[in-house]
Length: 281
Image 1 (cartoon, one colour):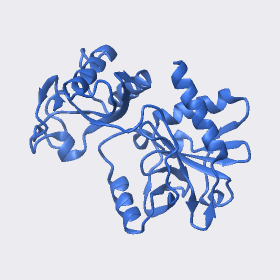
Image 2 (cartoon, rainbow, N blue to C red):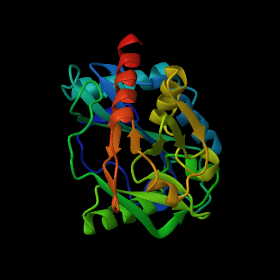
Image 3 (cartoon, rainbow, N blue to C red):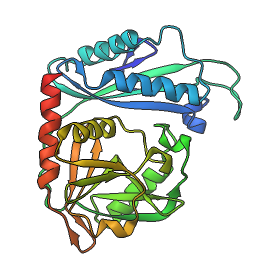
């Protein structure tokens, strides 16, 4: 069952052809990981959603408190019999129905969809063939809108099709300045020696929740340095390690880019530190 504006309904058609998220991509979403009823990084997700709604000029309902939305998420998980499981949650908000580009009314819909996830804590996926390449058909525009999790994901869809057609596990996206900004489904970190780089938000990468957690882990490690700076595609073949982050997988090591093979020593160490942080929180 799904949660549509607080009402639990069967997972069938529940929006009309006039829904603005469907017609124009006038919608935002958060992808959450919930472990045994605990939403990981919930405060970060909530404030990112509120900030994104303000940027999108959405009128935030008075009842959209952190406590209210948390209760709605947990209610949806429980009714689906997943209270003792790890769960992937999509929380979607849109501007309702009506209007052309200009909305007719200041309405906000939300819906919550849940599905069972694999692991309680983060692990290194065992995939010896995790190869990536650049997706160069279209480019990300640097700027604030590119950092939001909106329903406008055409480049990610096309890039995913390209990756499947060419038997890549993932692709890296470039911005209009031809800098590497992110993967199709997460942020990118590049390791050279004990120095780690990740693209800055200004380059147009998603303001990722796991990105923030990994930066904090690296800063607090005392063993590695972190720099938010533009990454040239030429740097990829000189790097020692490369990994992708999102809240569902945690850390996904990249094992190969073209003829370059990467190791995973520091990546695995960062993952251990992340899991330690989660256990202590």
